[in-house]
Amino acid sequence: MEHVAGPIHRVPLGFVAAYLVAEQGAEPAVLVDTGIPGKAAVIVDAARELAPATARAPIGHVLVTHCHADHVGSLAAVVARTSARVHAHPLDAAVIRNGAPQPPAIPASRVLRLLGPLFGRVGRAELEPVAVDVEIQDGSTTPGGLRAIHTPGHTPGHLSFFWPDDGGVLVVGDAASRLFGRLGLAMVNSDPAAARRTFARLAELEFETACFGHGPVLRGRANAAFRNRVERLAAH
Image (cartoon, rainbow, N blue to C red; front, side, top):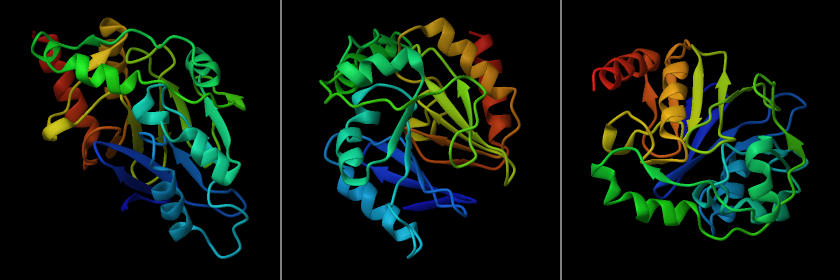
């Protein structure tokens, strides 16, 4: 587990990561995403490390960035262990609740067409249905004090989450990636044009730190790196 800033911690789960917002006062711990199937024990153990002795449960809420199996694969198991309430955007909630068809996975570039189908299959694997307790709207304040930002493109209901303190921390899910240390769009997106618009919108925010579903944390003037990437994307 890696401390990011304030109450936020990164939980590595192989090629993907989840994020824990530690308990604050009377507010229980909040989890962002659950990674691939089979990771519930790792996540709950990490949450217990952060939880005070008086905590009633290691995790009170799960915020879902989007409906792909590499981000909600362990959601059912985490809920079974913790009775956490699940929060997701309405446009992705149907997939999480009842296994509605996943959105398409279109490679972000010609080069990625070779690897895109592999990652698309991982993200589109069959999921165990899970109840969504709260449908999050753009601009909502979530448990843990995060602001939800609707960031469509990777999926129609993709969400990112913003922590306003400590210079600003943006948990982007797959609205951006930092695979192999290279900042850019996700490898596959349901709507590539919307994904590019979302990336540009995120670059307009003020944040020192960016946290990704795939790739290491970007620290120190992270928004400047996003803006530089927007300029390079516009040049092509």
